[in-house]
Image (tube, rainbow, N blue to C red; front, side, top):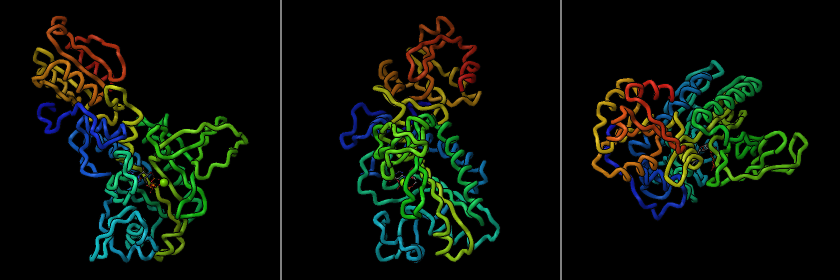
Length: 391
Ligand code: ATP
Ligand code: MG
C-alpha cells in the first residue's frame, strides 16, 4: 500500500486527553481515533493489526475444535432475567425496548446450544463487540466501553471432560500469546471464581506498568496469584514473591452447571474462556515501544516491511516485493527524509528498507529492523530473498 493513499495521517503532539501510552502512540501513528471515553474507531492500519490478531486467535481456537459463530449485541431482557444479571452495572440498557447491549454471552449461547444439539462435547466461540459500562475508561484501548472479545463456551457431559478441555484452552492461549509476542510477559494467574463459582479461575496477566491489576509471582515455581486471593505462601511452600503490575488479557472459568441448569440443560457442565482482542493490541503497544514509537511483533504488524524512498524512485522495488506477497507500506510522499524516518519509527513496522541515491550507487538498499540500531546494506537483486528469510 502506498502511504500517501492512507486517508489518515500521523500526529506530532500527544493527544491531551489521553494518559496511556497505548492510546497516545496508536492515535499519533494513525491506528485508532478517539470518539469518546473508552470509544475508539479502528483506522486502516489499526484494523490490519486487529485482523492479524483475530486470525491468530481463530486458528488456535479452530485447532482445539472451536466452531465459530456470531451472536447479536442486542439482547432481550428476558434472557438476562433468568440469570438475575439484568441489573448489573456493566449492562447498557435501551430504555423502552427491553433490550440490553451484550457485555458477555452466557445468556445467549446456553439456550442456543440447547436448542440445536444433544450431542456433546461442543465448543462454540465468537469474536464480537462487547459493550460495558466501564466507569474507569482511562487506559486507552485496554479498557473500552465498546471492545472486541473472543469468547469461547464449552459444553460437556462430565466434569473430567471439562477439566481436560480447560487444560487444552490454556495451551492454546499460550500459543496465541507466543504468536502475538506476549508470551514472555504473560503469566497464568490464579484468581477468584468471581460471580460464577466458588472455586478459582485462571487469568492470563501481561506484566506492564499500564496494568490495573497486581500479581504476585512465586520466585521458586513461577506460579502467579492475583492480589485479590494472594495469601503470602505459595502451594510449593515458598514465601518469596515478585510483585508486578499487570493487565488481564484473558480469563477462563469453569462455570460448572450454573447456566446450563438455569436454562434447563440437564447434566451439562460448561466452561467459558474470554480473550480481549483490542486489549491485547493495547497490551502489545504497552510492552513493545520506545521513545520513537511502536515496535510491532512480526505476526501482528500491519505490514512486513516499510519501504522509504529518499531522493529517488523505489517503485520497482515496491512492485517486486508485492509480487512475492510481501506486505509493503511504501512511502513515496513528497516529504523530508526526517519526516519519513520519524513516521516510520512511530508506526513501527518490523523492517525498514531505504532506497536513496547513495544506496543506489552500490545497487543496494539499507535495511534496519525496528528496535535495533544496526544498519545493513543488501543488494537490490537479493532483497526479496533477504526479506523472505526474515519473515
Ligand atoms: P477486568 O477485570 O480487566 O475488568 P473482566 O474480568 O471484567 O476484566 P472478563 O469478563 O473476564 O473481563 O472478559 C474477558 C476478557 O475481555 C478480559 O480478559 C479482557 O481481555 C477483555 N476485556 C474485559 N473488559 C474489557 C474492556 N473494558 N475493554 C477491553 N477489553 C476488555
Ligand atoms: Mg476478569
